[in-house]
Image: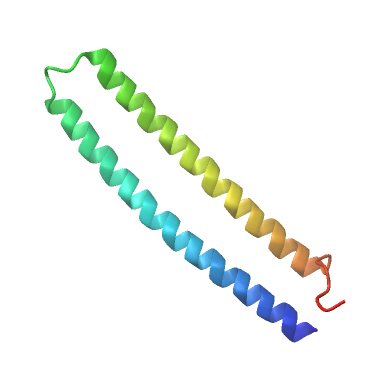
Length: 94
């Protein structure tokens, strides 16, 4: 039974590592797109300031949503690992 639990923990840790890798890659992409957008907005003298502010606000909303998503997934993994450590996870094969 202990071997099964260790295997489950390893699988969960592997999934978490994969998730973290995807999140980091996505975050790098989002940061780079923000840099590009800010460069564009700085050069777009023809664009009204209200529209530039709308783009900036959308960027901030996107960042907040992304952080909330990441925190939710991280909390889920943490709770799952706590359940496994406490032995409150359902037993397999019963």
